[in-house]
Image 1 (cartoon, rainbow, N blue to C red):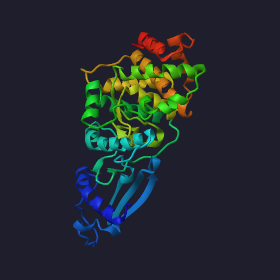
Image 2 (cartoon, helix red, strand yellow):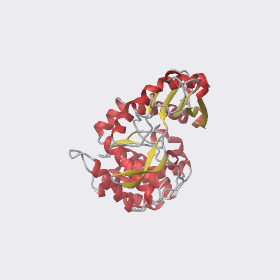
Image 3 (tube, one colour):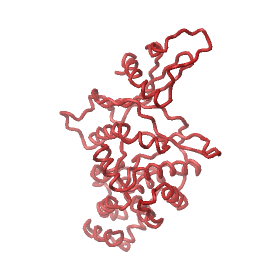
Image 4 (cartoon, one colour):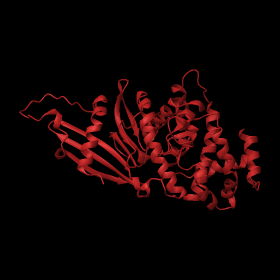
Length: 370
């Protein structure tokens, strides 16, 4: 239960981080006769708590905690995964275990990686306080902006710049592996990766192009895991996790995006983020967006880093489209239809004729994609 007593305690422990982040000033010049003391402005009477949403699987809630007094006004977002959803002593289903692990990952992200990403200018919530005594509790700043269900070209390019910044800041297998081992992020970024989606894989029909994809899926998953492009991906870059606003940048106004929900942030090729975002959030999946992302990523990578060519990026992206389509074929379709792209990859592997086994497709993927 999230009551005012708990809210007051959290506000008090968040104040140092709020002040350090310049989100609130504890010393204010009063122009009126308000004689409130700066030290007692966090009384419960000043706090309002609203429930924003319930977490997947009934594992907790997200709250907005607002404090208004005199000319002070601040907001803290609190994500609380209740202790009743803890894995200790309980055998969870594969899906529930994946969700429970994802909240630990998100707490690790805000605790260990977010501070460095903020120095890169990435628009993400500022971590204020994290607890693990009663489940998982994350206090963070509130992102500013508007939510959109449809992304036009300007918004899509803003997301591509955001993704390129994240990927470049965590670029390379060494840095990605370190984010997993030391940072506690997902060993396999994204929520649809094959290892935890075996039920969906089994439910894919065995005939037609979907049957061919079903037999090629493991080989494609293995190829993406050994892709030379590795970094930390967001893992759930859909429009519901984005907020857009205008910002003055280099003497011009530019559309920018802030993103949240880092439960599935972890190691993967950047093309997994790219394929997913283009399929479920963008207005199109045309090559101009791929070209733009490649340009933005290349500009952000250090001179010593491995820079993929545009052709290498597109090959990896074709496989990432197949990986996403594999999940959709077993779970249920939404977003842009990518069957044409998937069939093109399958035709390259089998010439249009089902190879009949996973081993045969593994050999074909090795031959065609290395």
